[in-house]
Length: 220
Image 1 (spheres, rainbow, N blue to C red):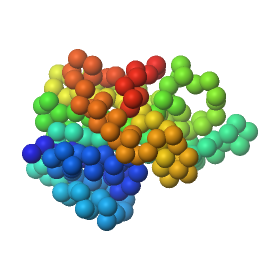
Image 2 (image 1 turned 90 degrees about the vertical axis):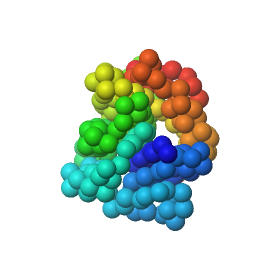
Image 3 (image 1 turned 30 degrees about the vertical axis):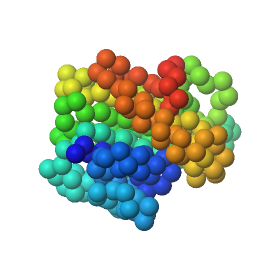
Image 4 (image 1 turned 180 degrees about the vertical axis):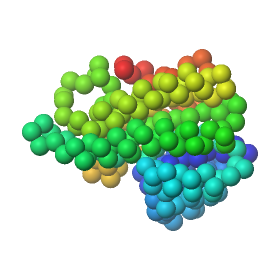
């Protein structure tokens, strides 16, 4: 049975992805800071107490899944904070970089021994990480961290292609989650369905692509 590991799996998009894959016959390993009954009802294994920005937590995660094979790794955990020019909080920007950019790279590198040939890695990014698409400014930390994640993902796609592992950068859409005070345009269920479709379509031929969950190719 195929196995998917999802970070930030206890709520929102991560939880809906866990539900989607479990409902389609996958075994799900949910990784989070604090578990939820909803996640525990669908996951084969929940690894909680994990701070993806801390090396010791990553070591705990690696130990918790020792010997497990992973066909799909979804780096979903993220942080959105609003940074406005004239009142920029550089600690906030640093936190967003740690969680949105460095952590997915850290998790991916640590779990590579568990990844199988033919496996896939999905990095949940944002079109706000697109430099070409930025016509509204603001959100300095979020934009920069997602742009960095996109750069990391592109390099991962090149380095992992010879190992038979494909990588996608995926924008879920403007989703009704706690991150945006539930003010989005689509539901987490709709986002998860679209993201899963993009993951299904990911191959070594299109590895390194930057897609909207609706299938649109996004500019860097």
